[in-house]
Structure formats: C-alpha cells, structure tokens
Image 1 (cartoon, rainbow, N blue to C red):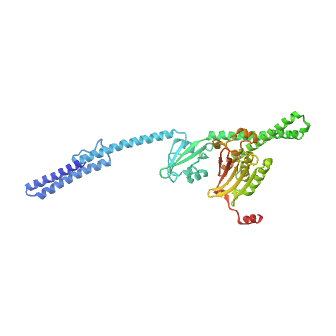
Image 2: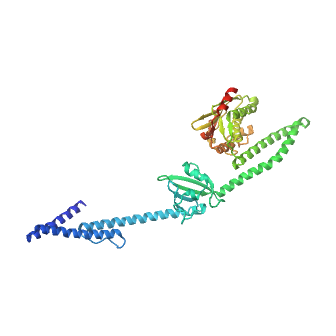
Image 3: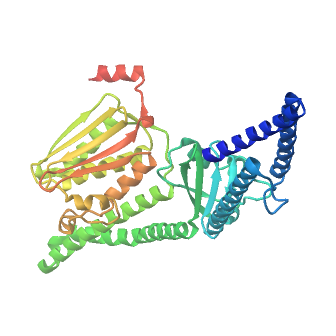
Length: 444
C-alpha cells in the first residue's frame, strides 16, 4: 500500500511538472501549472461523482466503476469490501433464519424482551401457549399481554433460580412453567413450557391420596373401636388371642397415624389449609411441643433443653407451624436412644429466624439426606418399623416451610447425631409490641 501511494504521488508530481514544462515552452510556466491543477481537479471530481453514485446504490451494477491509478485501486478495494460484506451478511442471515426455524420447531414458547420488558421476538409456540399475535404485539410491554400478578412479581424480582408455575393468559386450561434468563444488557429470555399433563397427573395423585385416606378413615375407626374394646377385655379372651389382638391394635393405631398424616399432607399440598397471616408465639408453641415430647419420651428419660431468643413472634399459619415443629422434635425423641439429649433452639439473625433441633442419636448416612423429605423414604427401614413412624413427617415439614417461604437444612453423620434446622425469611418475623414485652417481663 505504501509502495502504491509513492508511485501515485510520483505520477501526480510528474504530470504537474509536464504541464509546467509545456507552459514554460510557451513562456507561461505558472499558467501551465494552473492548467495541470485544474485538469487534475476536474478528473478527481469526475471520479468522486462516480464513487458517490456507486455508494448510493451499489447494486445497480455488477462491478465497481472503471478508473485508473489511485481511484481504480480505491474502487477495486471498496468493491472487494462490499462483496465480503454481502457474503458475511448472507451467512449471518442464514444462521439467524436457521436459529429461528429451529426455535419455531420447539414445543416450548420462547420470548425475547429488552430490559424494560418490551417484546422483541417470540416463536410460534409462544403464540399458541400465550396468545401473542405477531402483527400487533411486537413492541408491546409483556405485562400488557401477561397480566398475571405472580408473573409481574417474578419478572421484576430478577431472582430466576426457580421457575414460575402459572396458567396461560389466553388458555386458562393450559398450565405453564416459566423460566427467565438474563442476557446481554439485562435483556430477558423467557421459556414457557406446557406442563398441563404433569399438573393433571399430580392433581390426580393428590385427589387419589386424599379421597382414599378419607374413605379409609371411617372403616378403620370402626375396626380400631372394636379392637380397643377387645384389648380392654383381654382378660376374658383365650390366651392365644391376646397377643394377636394386641398386635392388631398396634397396627391399627399405626394406620390411623398414617391416614392422619396423609390427609394433613394432602391439605397442605392442595391449599385447603389457607395460609393465614396470624402471629404465632414461638416460645409458647415450642414449650407446649417439648412438654408433649417429654411425655412421649416416658421411661426413656430424654434430656430436652429449650433455648428461645428475644424475637419469638412469627407470621404464618400456627397449625402448620405446630405440625412442622412437633414432627421434628418428636422424631428426635423417637430416634434418640434412652437417656440421650435433645436441644431445641430458636434464634434470629440477619437472614431470618431459625429452629434447630439437635439430638444425640445414631445419626444418618449423608448419602440419604437429599431424599429424606420424600414421602415414605426410609434411611433405615428397621428403625422405621421399631418407632412406628409413617414416613411422612419430613415431607410435611418440607411443605409447611415451602408455604412459609422457608426451607429445611439437615446435618447428620453416623454416630454423631443429627441436626434439623428450619429457616424462615426475615420478612416472617414480627416485632414484639412494647406492652406485650412488658407483660412478659412482669410474668417472668
């Protein structure tokens, strides 16, 4: 490039020297130089005009304008850049079309919005699942088309670790699972998956468990009643029947406990127990549950200690919270050997409120911990049979905590006991009113 520029410069200077020499031949060297400059300027303007018209509409001709010297190289260089640009554009357009075609082939709805929620693009499945119209909805705010309050809160919260379950705004019979991802300059990629079949299967399972549990309760109550009568009059029965009647009574009691837990879990899952915003006095609740736990311990003489922090008021459904706390504390009693220690501690920090139940039992292999909250999962079936547990206690705890925006943490090692911690968010804590705090101090 530097070599060509030097050559062009020498040609221009040579041309001007030649015109000056011609002018000198006629006794007018300055007129010859001026004439040469004018000729070069006119030629340059003509080439610039060609360049202007070609750049204004480069597709009118198959190639670049014809020229000589520096302008010829400029036209050829621009023509090559233009051809390269066209090839790159065609390749990118083909890739974009292929991506759009593959995305349109997906059964999941895919939507792209900017950081403000303005719709930029969506695939065909989004039109079917969400009712978008390609001709009129482009450029609309997504909240104008999806008016579900839960979706607006999910979209604005910017916490997309968990998906959102919702109904389709255009087809209420369709249940969707929505997952949002951030990309670019806070733009959103929204994926809506049709989970109607899974929802129906889950609803069918819940209805089946709930209905069967309710239907079994009545005949089992009758059987338990007769068995209780037989146990009370065991002295009048032949000796060979006494052990059979006693075993039948124990198993009937176990079945009653199982059905009670199934009905409770079904109500919690289906939302029959509406979460109230009442205030629960955690200290009174824990004291009562621990008193019942001491009675459950009986002759095993477990040492149960209770420590409750200052902020002890929790917003939520007291009956569900009682179920969760009692399941954890009663499990500690059941699975801790006689004479063992159980520590129950309620404390608060910047993250929220926490209930920790620690026992000195034989512990649980960490391999089982991820599945402990599944229904009927047994880390140790032999222990489960001995204690008479239903296998639903931790499942109930998990769903209660989910209903209260919390989660369950399990720490355990074989031979070192176990610790179960209920975590509640800070928003669930309620400050103790001054008059109530003064009354509590006076009582103590």
